[in-house]
Image (tube, rainbow, N blue to C red; front, side, top):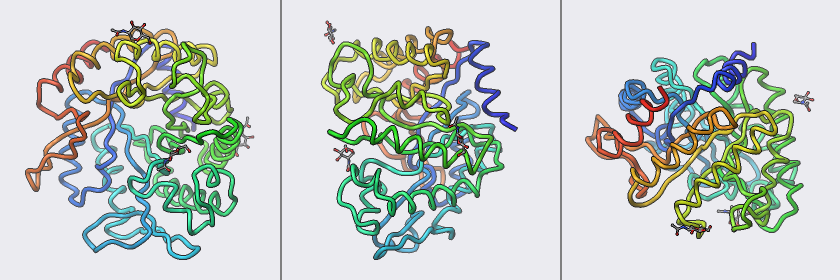
Length: 344
Ligand SMILES: *[C@@H]1O[C@H](CO)[C@@H](O)[C@H](O)[C@H]1NC(C)=O
Ligand SMILES: *[C@@H]1O[C@H](CO)[C@@H](O)[C@H](O)[C@H]1NC(C)=O
Ligand SMILES: *[C@@H]1O[C@H](CO)[C@@H](O)[C@H](O)[C@H]1NC(C)=O
């Protein structure tokens, strides 16, 4: 029991560090061997953690070749456990087990990619994310989905953590809205699963710092208050200077500011997403060094955004959003091989 929690805290005290990455798309591949090959590349590269989307919400059912996990219609939701449904996530969990990769599984998106909270709106009678967090009907549907996923993988040793949402925000809301939602959801998850860790998946907004936009509380997040919640196991934060109107060097202070809160609260920090559209190696390797340098004082792991590879069965490259680091490239050598060596 609590093996994963114990492992994580042991790693913290031993000042070990983990490297990993993000692949929102891997649960949406339709060929098991493609998934297995990519997991094999992560294993041989020394990557330990992979964060994936555990959601794929639609408001109209797509054709049979397209993967989706939950469909909303009228006031109800149907969870798709079929071959183009959660069985695709099963293949990811199975391949992760085989290759010793630990997964962070996320339950809903703030953004509309793959549905998001907006996909729930008409079924639960709301029209904004701000309402979604507090409307009981929305939360009942969300918790039903969470339960369906957790009951599938509750006993898998490939689960690193359950994650509430991708980048939850509540623009202009009192921070208590998100704090209350995070408390209720994390307590609910803990009631279903006493073994695995639980985290938020937020961008890291709302904490003491230089007062620039990301440190402000206007997106509704109070980072330290949320991390302090008893059933939240570790802190998450992201870094996208270009989207946030700050420069790349500023990112080092951003990492330090979060590490400081983590050290104070005695919970590990995960630098969960980071990306730049150009100069991946030179910019991001500095952030990796800053994060690794804080392994004795708050930081425990980092995951770059995002994993790129070639899909074996089709020969096609996976999604290129400009931040992607492809397996087998010079960027991979820099941000994966060299980083894993530095971690030792
Ligand atoms: C994500 O949340 C923020 C704050 O509530 C909101 O402004 C933004 O529109 C959300 N994204 C979507 C797609 O709803
Ligand atoms: C964590 O969640 C469990 C299960 O819901 C709950 O019983 C417990 O009170 C929560 N922990 C704390 C310290 O609030
Ligand atoms: C980056 O921004 C900070 C303010 O946040 C400023 O002090 C610093 O000089 C800037 N650095 C560069 C290289 O532009």
